[in-house]
Length: 335
Ligand code: ASP
Image (cartoon, rainbow, N blue to C red; front, side):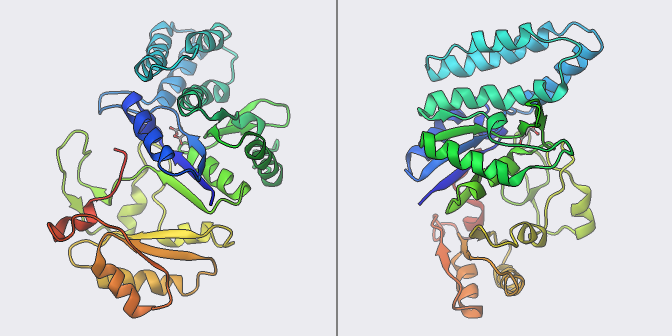
């Protein structure tokens, strides 16, 4: 069994989050490939490293002093390193990066350093090898991924090193220059790694159930939006990025080649378990790949069994009996 685990920005935002990641990784030996985003926000008034790096580049471009941004970034990396009590010369690496910066430094290179340094710290903390995405994720000059070359390089890096941490979000052009993906691209890097090594499972550890009425980091226990129309959903973008929230159909299309088995979790709510199960199994009737369905809600699982007894099911466990209404809200999540 081989698993690729991708951790998003909030899951690596500080040392406490790094510790949770280590616990997850250590709890399962098959989690041998870890893909990491740049450290994200620790709280609602904090900054994502990637945003700070874009800001840094804008300052350089227009000749505005950027010392404060550089200091903020530097302090955060050092803070994570010190809190984790690891021995890693992050100052040296970071300073050699900032020393070279100029008006001309390409934006892609600058913003990729968030993932680069965060992954270095993670590799050190986990005791895994660091594999630079620039050496294994390749784009053509047309900006398209060179999938075959990328798969071969990732596979070799994992075979050579055993357990690896790879930064998400970027790769390199044929001339060796860094190229970043669209915002949120670490998800793509994780999927590439999983496909490259024919992983049994690709785990994407950034998880909030449903759509909430307010940011849970600002408002305590915000209500969930139970009904949202397709048109409304299309207006939402993921966390300040240009990314749309994909529909179930779109996700299935992405995996239509069937190369990767899917684990589909049903998040039933407000008594809709039978309807939800029916809609999902009907859609899956025409899906060619391997999949299983799981849920914290036993009623959803029993609906799946009645409708399609042949589908492999998994019952997730929680304190369902103590609090049936809450069953779908409790999951193992990082944040
Ligand atoms: N750090 C990049 C971003 O914020 C990529 C990612 O997190 O996936 O968009």
